[in-house]
Structures are given as C-alpha cells and as structure tokens.
Amino acid sequence: MFSKLSVVVTSVLITLAAAIPTTIPVTPPTSDQCCASVVDSSSTAAGAVLAQLGIDLGNIDVPVGLSCSPITVLGNNCGGVTTRCDAPEIEWGGLIAINCIPITL
Image (tube, rainbow, N blue to C red; front, side):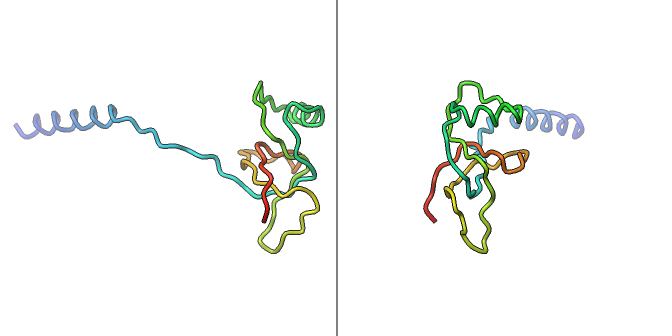
C-alpha cells in the first residue's frame, strides 16, 4: 500500500514541477570596455568587421564598439570611448563589442 502511495505522490510532484512556469529574467553580463569608436551596427565600418568575423546581426540595429579592450581595476587610461558592452560568449580579439553604451567613469 505504501509503495503505491509513494508512486502516486511522486507522480503528482513531478507533474506539478513540470507544470510550474519558470520564467526568470536573464540579463546578459556586461563589461566595461575602452573602444576606439562606437558606431551603429548598420555602418560601413561595423559591417566590414562583422562580415570578417562571420557575425550576422540581421536587422538588429545596436551600437557597436570597434577596437575594444577591457578596462582594468588599476586605472582608466582610455584614450577612446569608455563604454559598457554586452560581454560576448566568445572573444573576437578586441576587434568588436556588441551593444556598447558610452559611460562616464
């Protein structure tokens, strides 16, 4: 009797767990970058770099940082534009950063 009851309870719990929606908002990680310039993704310069790297943004129009490097804790010696960009899942050798918003440190 207890084995049948435990099977029923386990089945009910599994069904409830599967039925509960788990929508947790996920925000992409960001990183502070020093970029030579920030241009629109539809610009010629951004298009050339994106094409070389094989990145297709489709019709998404976002600010793109060109020639970017991370800003370290040791100091801000940025000679270009200080930005906060979406941290890429893969690194592109500092050539480009996506969704860059200029910031003031």
